[in-house]
Amino acid sequence: MDRIRIVGGRPLKGRIPISGAKNAALPLMTAALLTDQPLTLTNLPHLRDIQTLCQLLAQHGVDIQFDGTGNSAFSTQARRIVLTAKDITNTTAPYDLVRKMRASVLVLGPLLARCGEARVSLPGGCAIGTRPVDLHIGALEQLGAHIAIDGGYIVASAPGGLTGDRVVFPKVSVGATENLLMAASLAKGETVLVNAAREPEVVDLANCLVALGVEIAGIGTDTLTIQGRQSLRATEHEIVPDRIETGTYAMAAGITDGDLELVGARSDLLESVFKTLRRAGLEVADTAQGVRVRRINGFHGTDVMTEPFPGFPTDLQAQMMAVMTRASGAAMITETIFENRFMHVPELMRMGADITIHGASALVRGVPTLTGAPVMATDLRASVSLVLAGLAAEGETLLNRVYHLDRGYERVEEKLAACGAEIERLRD
Ligand code: EPZ
Image 1 (spheres, rainbow, N blue to C red):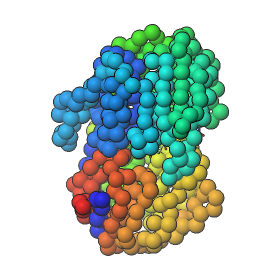
Image 2 (cartoon, rainbow, N blue to C red; image 1 turned 90 degrees about the vertical axis):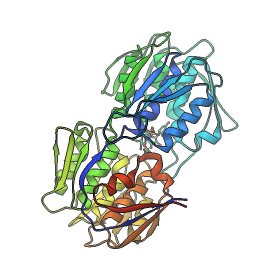
Image 3 (cartoon, rainbow, N blue to C red; image 1 turned 45 degrees about the vertical axis):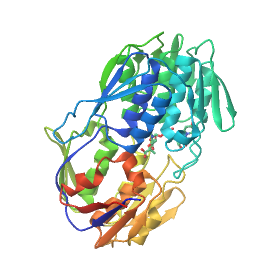
C-alpha cells in the first residue's frame, strides 16, 4: 500500500488549484439515474470515490463517457463526464460496492422513483460513527414506498410510483435531503422537505435538478418545495468547488506560516470557517481567481463547534484540530455531528500534541513543536489532518493507509509539493 512521506518545517507558498467537490459530484452523478437523457457534469474531481460510483452506476446500466481535457490550466485529465441512463438494467446496489463507499445509498431515491423498485445494500457503520440511514427510509416511506430490510439490503418498492408529501426531518441530514430531493423530482405532485440540509452540495444538486426540469422552491433554505415531473431532460452542470479541500489548504497555510492562493475557491461557501481562521490570526481575502490565505498576526487557540451548514463543518474538524496543536493558548473543539470523529487524536498525540478528550469535546493546548512520526488514520479527514501536522512537524512523518486520502483529495502530494512542501508518495 502507498505511503506518504513528509519532512516538515517548510512554509507553503504559491497557488493551489481547488477541484470540484467530491460531496457534490457523488449525488450529482446519481441524479443521472432519474432520466434517460444525458447528464453532463464538468469540473469533475479525480478521486477514488468517483471511480467507485462509476462502477456502481455502470452496473445499473448507466453509460459513462469521459470527454474533454479540463477547464483549468492545472488539469491534465478529463474533467467532463457524460452519464446516460437510457435503460436501467439492474436496480440492485450490491454490498461489495456500497461497503466501499456509503454515498452509494444515494442511488436509492432515484432508482425507486424511476423504476418503482430498488435493492440497496445497507451501508453499515464506519470509522466515524454508526451512521444509520433511518431518515432516508422513513422519508421515502412517507412518499409511498414500501421498504423492508432483508438479508442486509434495503428492499424498496413503489409499483404505482411515489407521491409527494410533507416530510419533516427530525434531524438535519445531507444524504437524506439529497435522496429525497431526487425521489421527489419524479414523484406525483408536490413534496415539501422541512428541516432540510442547506449544505452547498445540496444546493448544487437542487440547481442541477432544476436544470433537468424539476421545479424547486426554497433552494438554500431549510424548506424545499419540489414539484415532481414525469420525465426529465438533458443538461450540463458545473460541479461546485470543494469547500472542504479549500478549508484544508487554508489551514495548511496557517499551520506552516505560509501564504497560499487557492485558485477557484469560493469564500461564500466557507464563511464560518474563514471567520474562525481570522480569529485565529490568519488573513483571508478574495482575489480575482479565488482566495488568498496567510498568517499575519500570531496564531491563537480558537474554539470550534461543528454544526450543519452554515456552521463549522464536521469535515474540517480534524484539520482544525491539527492546526490548533501549534497555536498559542488552548482551543476547545466540539464535534456534534458524528459520535466517533476523534480518531486522529491519538495519532496527533504521538506527534507531540497535547490533547484531552472530554466526551464530544477535545481540549487542545498548543505546543511549540510537533515531531514527525509514522502515523495512520482510519478515515479521509483524519488522514489529511495528519498531513497538516506532518507539514509543520520537525523531521519525517510517514503516513500509512493513503487510500483514505485518495478517496477525497486529488493529487494532494503534488499540490502541496508545488508550493514548497517536502512531500512524496512512496509506492509499494
Ligand atoms: C455527508 O454525509 C457527507 N458525505 C459527509 O462527508 C459529511 O461529514 C456529512 O454529510 C455531514 O456534513 C457526503 O456528502 C457523501 P448526514 P451523510 O446524513 O449525508 C445522522 C467526508 O469526509 N443520520 O448529514 O452521510 C448521522 O449518523 C464525509 O467527505 C441519522 O441518524 O451525513 C450523522 O450523525 C464523511 N440517520 C448526522 O445524521 C440517517 O438516516 C448527519 O449525517 C442519516 C443520518
